[in-house]
Length: 558
Image (tube, rainbow, N blue to C red):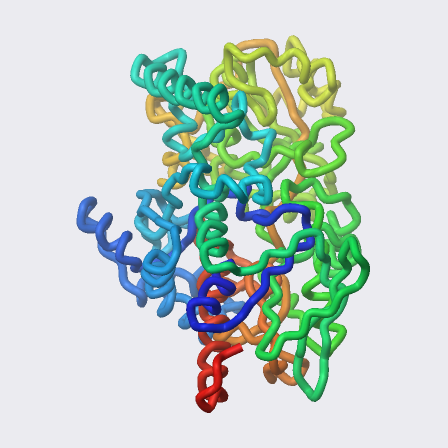
């Protein structure tokens, strides 16, 4: 969408082709943040909180994370043009951002910062009333009575509504406004996070008369005269060919739903497991498949092949609506994670990408294939657990379905999850000792500013640690899921797809998760997938438009 809008403003004719029945992809169901160091929003926030940032500092941080996979040319292009992209997109579209104060995902590393993430400003559906049915919504399983929560701060208000008058008043106002919208308009009208991001871009695309064709899967690329000249689409009316005079930009969401590519590029311990992921069912690696068929190079050298997140799944779930991404609950005091050997394996409060990377490493080292999130009754009713909401929302239906396992003691719970009762009891006893002292001697949970940011500041002595001591006890099985893939097509700093000889394929660009991770398979901070998607979408469109202008010779651009 960023590329199409940028190209349209440059005078090019463009069309957006979408495989799914609705547009928006993973972004529409995401947090809607972008990781852009040194934007004008971030500089303003930095002045308020007394923190400064530089491109050099951000580069050093990215390099420390990417290690041997560091791609200097693409990283430099991203960091140099990110702030300009934000200014451009806000001047040319309905999209608006605001800086949020929050740590990078590795705050202990040199060069990290608290002012790099930009959040999408909420939007109202009345601006796209004629198009709202064509836009993918938030993950339905994460809504509360149809209401989407707009920020982590808002989520905490909802979690603590029965313990704080301030939170209760805030939640009451939000719910009254939401139900008033439902009564008057048939649905909530406040769009937040990724839904707002895509809604704002859809508004601009509609105003620019950019055609958006849904239910049209790309089958193959046209390759004529040494360049890409269009694509063949599968539509409800049969195959159709769209010819492109200038270029085709691939943005098909990577390959998390492709069994073949998962087997080829994922770690062997999970390569054959069914995906347990909240990403759209349509993200099956079409971009990589079509590009490789005409000689494109697939770059599988990323440190991690995917942007990982721990997930759980409802029994008999058939699509992404039955999957829960555990982004926040596992950080709360009163929970711990174990493998099937009954022992912990990582700091439960660390960022979701690093957490699953540690899970996969431990799977291999300890010959395990499953993990469990465990908590006591106090934690469950205070924070919720996956699909289970905090009190006073009922939860027994999840026990009945088998999603949530319940037991009167830790030893009994061990039997229900096929773990040695003695080992699990020892693990919980050790963890409880750490929690009471406020020091996690095994994995240092709660020491990082990232851990503390998502934990409970009112809990002492460690905001991230609380003993499991109030029966009954509960467990939910946790899977190594993903929110996208990092391995992908090799591209240059203009987002041009490269062939086996590292030469650009004329007329072919790849952005988003179709492009190999600019961060080398590392995850520097919130918005580190959407940020590159937008920056390289913008750079690709500008590169195409500049080439068209040079070739125009006074003729209208096409």
